[in-house]
Length: 163
Image (cartoon, rainbow, N blue to C red; front, side, top):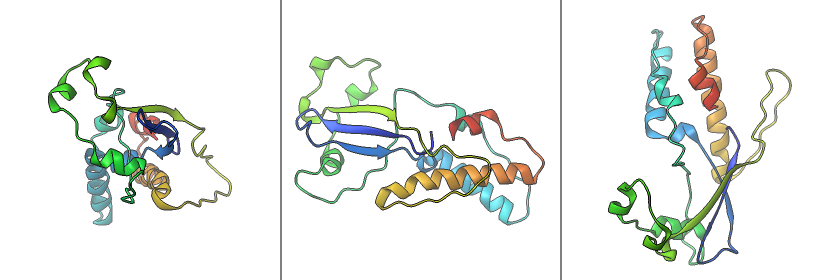
């Protein structure tokens, strides 16, 4: 999934469309696990990783990182200012007639080919803004891969499949 993205736009203003990338490493549970592993390795200790958090992906949700520029017509600004009815969010199924189009968004994806990382060769990375988050997942993948290889362990499928 590294480098794949989602197309997001509001029902009220479908002409303003933005592409947002996923950054799995920014999910709180995964980030905490990565930081714990990195700290253990830096201190020269063996590490344990709860790989179940990497494979247990709820396909009904995505986690996007959006920066708002506080522009009146900006999509990220609109999303940041949107409030959701918590009772509706708890329901397993939400019918269209229960939603306000003021707070409704279309999300299409995942899209794109991703980074298509090869095991060897020259890799060049360039980005700007929140596009840098794609490479945070790449760094996380390399951190996990190298830590496991250093200890002579095989990277669990749940982790390798995520990245």
